[in-house]
Length: 407
Image (cartoon, rainbow, N blue to C red; front, top):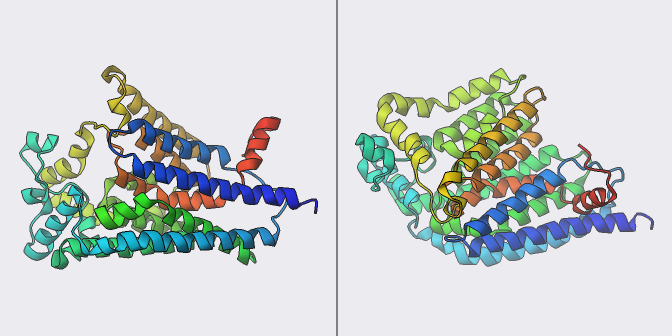
């Protein structure tokens, strides 16, 4: 009986955290363009939660009934949300994508796979004249070459092939998230593991924007994110070559967020099989760099680095002479994390936590904070928040009492 209150508090922590996440996801979905401040608040909460809750040490195990109650509740919520959002957004798979990058991916894929056209010198793959394209007289596909492999179905099937690929990646992303959680689960803890999977599933399906961007808009970010998750899974299993390979392939598909993920492996005890794997994963990148270096660098890197800001970003709210603070924040955060980790042993859970922290700081200080960027975060939020979902009230108590966080 004496353990009832601690168990109830930790169960309540899981439910309160899930409720707050659902509210914030809903808020994010309703406020997109012209609401830069709201988006900054959303990401700021995520940042605060990750930094504030990471590292709690529990001295007492939870009772089994807590896991059973939690699993039952989240299983019901997952079923309801999947049916609700699925019935609304799954029919959109039969429609063409609605965003420009997806349309350009279809055009580039058709040109490459059916006509052997270089996507980076194909002006039809990027009808907009972006800053560096105009300056250099080169116009073409603006993402990584391995994206064309991931969306090869769009060559014979057009936009429907891209949407069908997204549906497959949507499902596979959930499965890999579960595999990562299973790798980190304590032995002989069936109900604890099941409740963790149920919480992660809730996070994955509770964001309406996640469904909307992947299945309605046809955002192509889900493929490189899936590759990062596969890399993290193999990292959990200490297969460093495959971890590096899939990380490199993600970078070959899209520079961000893969570049941030790979940056976090830079440390004193870096694994050479990982480096070899990354090098193998960058073969598509290097191949197109050799094929047309100027066009490739212009469209896949320089254009993104020189795009102006829009109304979704805090840049639109800040005086221009203070915009340098955003760059300073990114550089400072990256430098701090690099120094913090340089002498530490490689740990995938720590990397995923740092990945979220650094990506959120980059996103808050980015020139564009678009809805599709949420895809970069949702699967990792599902993993990391599942690990510390019981810790909300424990950490608040430590702050009030003055014990401070245990790291």
